[in-house]
View 1: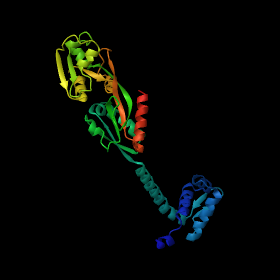
View 2: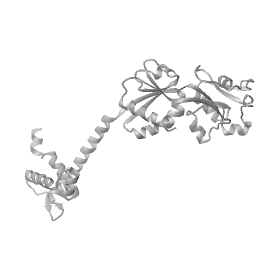
View 3: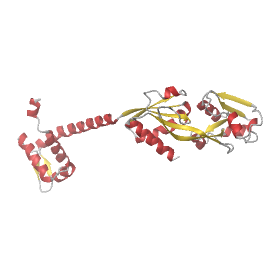
View 4: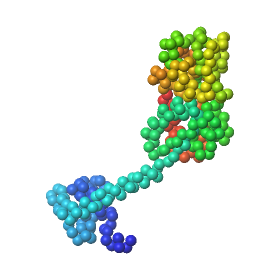
Length: 298
């Protein structure tokens, strides 16, 4: 270390030299360095004194590198740039953080994946991972930073804030209507109904029809599915009429892949909640803020 110290001038002087050589003007160099022209000139003279050579040819307004100055500049300039790049990467690495999100298959597949790119673009230092599971125990493990869960807001030991209300209505593809005719509240029982089974807390056709006071007849055909994404894909493929959840199927309706054949809908006290523990990481706080702003704008 002592040998290097003897051979190498102070790095602060080399930095001033690099800026002055780049601009060819002590005044402009002073502006970039946040100092005066006189201070730059003084530090350059000090460096020249240490090295025993003239580095600049002083002119009326500007300065010009001498042959010795050009030799030094060719070495110093890329070295300082490399150091600056390395420091930038280190700072970025320090700010970078992992974020583990968890939700059920429906929300992960039909909402989160469609919008997560927006969060990443606004938070490039955060690396999110997604755990998709219909088992709440998986979504509430200690390694999960933020969970988005369907329910009524009761998760003991966790904070829960509702982000999406539940509104349920019929959906089907345009092709299904072309092949099978209009779908209305009066003839719904004549159509193939795609039903969701396996989760007691999710609304199915029987509950929906009863709530809408349309439970008069027995549907002709019912096809059952154990998860919402699969049922929705079946509806997009034109295989029947499914129940659609607002926010989860909005993008499919907007794109025209699904249509709402009639306007009757059911709203419940349930919905999707932002579920967190006390002591959120900075990345988790950023995600919660982003989701809140996202839902406020919808």
